[in-house]
Image 1 (cartoon, helix red, strand yellow):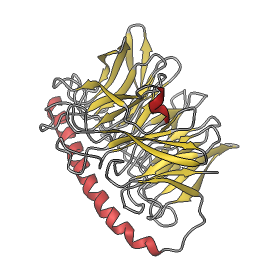
Image 2: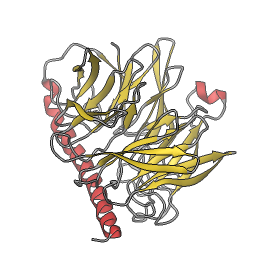
Image 3: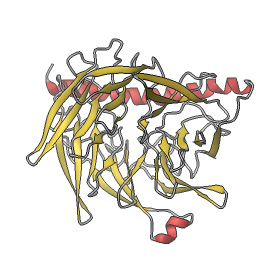
Image 4: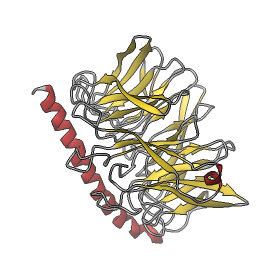
Amino acid sequence: MAQQQIASSILDINLRARTAVHILLAILAASFTIVAGTPAQAQTLNTLHTFSGQHDGGGPAGLVALDRAGNVYGSAPHGAIGGGGCESGCGAAFRASYKNGAWTFNPIYDFLGGNDGGEPQAGVTLGPDGAVYGTTLFGGGTGCGGNGCGTVFKLTPGGSFCRMVLCSWTETVIYRNNSLSDPSVLIGGVIVDNTGNVYGMSVGGGTNGCGAVYELSSSGGTYTLGEPYSFQCGDDGAAPEGSLAMDAAGNLYGTATYGGAHGFGTVFKLVHSAGGYTFNLLYSFTGGNDGAMPESNVVLDSAGNLYGASGDGGGIFQITPSGAFTLIDPILEGLQAPINIDAAGNIYGTTYRGGTYGDGSLFRLSYLNGTWTHTVLYSFRNIGGNLPLSGVGFDADGNLYGTTTTGGTGDRGTLWQYVP
């Protein structure tokens, strides 16, 4: 089959899979309400906000980010004021702040689903300028069935006043799809380097139609699109759904969800030099005990070890600087959310299944004397939120933050804080 046919098939699979996921979430939400009568466990989790599906959004997932003041940022792909072809609202970006002994929740932007984008399901990240960056799955133009192929956005407060009170931030769309070869279907989030350049991956588009790693170079408030790498639907991989990591030398790391030597996805490194980027294949998943089709992000520790998550019978993996691949924690199901790593090298994440009640778990993976230990820190329940599909953020005191996609009093998800 020609490369373009393969790319078209992969893109179609992803779009149909996302539709199926939305249906599955609704089914799971309905079934999880049955366990509300389970005896309460010891409370170790604080619910900071319960989403209503209105102005605050609903169904939050993806990356959460914290600034130096301890404010928590994220996004919800559904709810808010809707329009623009979004079936259940076009979503919102939010900030939660702690002041005078109480938490205040503030929707900082409601997406309309038009040129501004819609359904920000990948979460957000913070840039060195204090702005909030992220992607939307739809909107931004007329492609991809008329709703647009997604956007990369930047949210900035309207001066110091808006940093302190409840008011909307200003959105700038720094990228929208303009041609068939441009990156499209932005399921993953973005990272921002110290000079304000933005990097991410797309499921579709690119020179070969198999997805791409894209770079938005910043100069004087203007962003220029570049493609450090376009996937070929071969041994290199195809249709990446996750988010990238960057080391101090500017090298980029990520996963491709499909393709590879066995067809189950890859892990790669883009080596940065003055002449551009050189692709380096680090690992091809076999679909066996190592897992398959990685959908999430990768992270680096201080020693240069790379960590990520593989689904479908896999778990948390490590690739050393020498290239050795090890599955360090076999999590057989429910592993889809982004992972994070603290300064001590502990890895944190969530599973959308498992835990005491089957509603998902918050876990820590710690290394001591040659052994990795998996600790379940919290088991989610419906009333406090379930189906956690978010990453885990940290504040300066070591408290953990994230979201659940369903559950809570309105079954539209929650924003939570875990205090060790």
